[in-house]
Length: 559
Image (cartoon, rainbow, N blue to C red; front, side, top):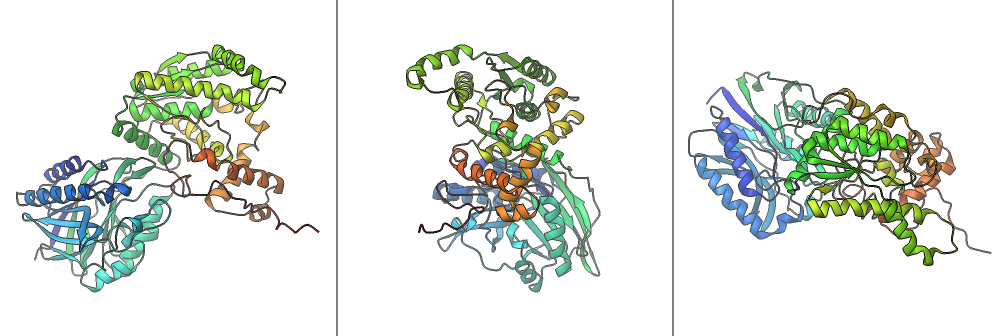
């Protein structure tokens, strides 16, 4: 029985549904891992995670089984054994599982026991839970292979340890959210390791998948809880780890432990990687966006350049008679700093045309929101026309603060294919802009230096749909609005709770009312990357039609 093992961790991206391409990445990583005893791949790597209802197609599962058989045959050639995540049908039930491929065959299959059914996860409607698993045997070593959620509760690891596991290798599809890396290491993995006294290798996928993005950040902790190896976040890596059997059991030798991205770089990288994979996987040649001279569109333009390169970003300024010279100058300066294609397309003629068309119907009514929103809808139509004509995906630029309270025009600035800022509050957007002006992200393709003019950072935010308009005319100041929204959205606090924390009751009631009234708009918004614990759509699923308000009193019967 050997007293050393070499285990390679394949922290890779996946393409959901492209089974052949995912299998190719397995073989390529195995070739890199020559000299290792085992190479490991993330959860459901052969199919891609999360497959959602695509996994319910029998043809997909059958194709995955056939490809897994080919990979098993490939394991007969010189090289390491493989631990590959896929879907399995046993006794007519569909399971999320992992296969050990060794010496030309499927040597073992283990099934996920704990199926997450909260937040972004709904695996209980897709899979059946497997039994409490037993270890697999590789080179005489008993290895526990819990799958993702299996380590978030203690039962599976305890069961594996009781059945003789000497180490854990946990494959994952764990989406990014703010502070998630600390939770994985300190809150989960170290606890399982220390509870059982066994080392644990945690392998996570990397890359974007629709509204989710996976940060990688795989690692190994030893049985004493010490961090032995850390993989980088936001990048694919194939890393060999070295293991030694001591009198006290297996221990992973000390390897590289690079620092992970700190806040707000982690958020920025999440946006970049999510947009990159969304655009490329959906085969768009690039993106087009409206560049207004405001903070949101400027940050979106910077994210797009870092994700795709300046040659794939088309920024369009569409001034009206309300557009200030400052906005024109700032948009042009931003476009120049980023090096993107830049066009100016005034919309006054289109506005005049709509005014004439709607004049008989609007006659005798004061100008107001309908006329203001026409400008936004004209811009949305023009940008979609460019997208249809030339192919780039239209990028929308609204932030989470605006989406929360409906300060966005449906079929106007909400029109588009993807929104990088959908889950970022306004004050977060300012923090991202300041950070990007000082740094280039490690995974970014954009230029160094200040790419967002200082004037954009200091001007009061405005939609410029009427004379002297400011966001503060309609909303509380963002440094007040964002903490209220954080309480209402992320923490489900009531009006009374927020009032006890020092917020003005009337302001909180106004924000709660706008939050609920805007649900119908959010249902029609484009997807955007999840950053927080409660993003709109996958995490926070509210009815459009309801009458509950936490700040209202119980209605009394009339006398």
